[in-house]
Image: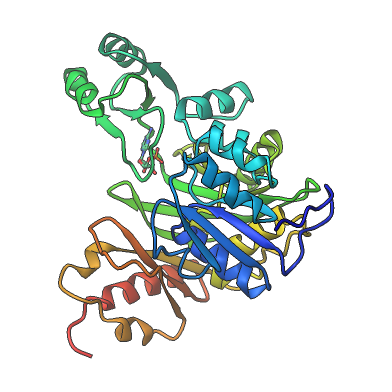
Length: 387
Ligand code: AMP
């Protein structure tokens, strides 16, 4: 049964929201949706998933099972996603029965590094110097122009540093090309950045805009390790980064949440590294530290409701909990909970593989630096022996 809504009328509590994908982003979206009285359906190729454990209905089907996607869309009021590598065929199939927000075109642009970089450059946004590479010869020629070090990245399906290889000298080109095992890649100049920052932003159905400010991110093995909010940057950088984010969401006509990741150079120049058309790991702090979280904001945007205040209630930091923490047995949860200003989030994943995102910790404090120290200390405490 489908309740068809005329375009423009908000999707109100009691309605059913469909999420393509079933990881932790969908889980936290579903928690926000449940809190506001919505129902949630999720579709992914897995079961007993982080999102499925919270949702009203978990459908196990491949994303390219278009009949399953159509059936899924027929039973919800709006479709969103938490996994961006869904094909245009799937979003088109869903669109026949329910609005898809952000639209499939946003996904199509941002799920492929070459398309994304082309969009950004053509629209005048600052990006890392880069070239398209389709053979070893082209790679060697591009290295000649861009110099070394450089990073070779597959054109599609990349996240958390997967599908990329750093090249220190031209002599490493052949090995890097073989390792990537692809027919289409992008070579980027290595940016000796001062800091990595991101802006998680939302755009409503009416074109309204709100962002969660500029936050600082540090990575370990290409995976986000720590986010600190707000980032210690100048007022000008803050203004420039949020203006770039606003312009990107506007240009892409996003309805929903999108994260812009930047490199900040030693000259305070911002270069866009990557876009993610959904809530982002670097916005998880907002769940505890902001008046409206990135997940509630996604819900408000896709339902055509007014966006909420993104006010940061206190400086905050988020440390990721990867599967590696389980290598010596179950982490010491009680020890982390002993920090009174720390919130523990676990995603309900049973298989703690190294590098797998299992949860995160958010710490609130009087200063961003104190919050960062607390988020790291609470995570270290997980490895303490005994009670
Ligand atoms: P990505 O998957 O493209 O976001 O890359 C993951 C991480 O690798 C980034 O957050 C950076 O820490 C690092 N990285 C990627 N590309 C570059 C680059 N061109 N210069 C310097 N570091 C990079």
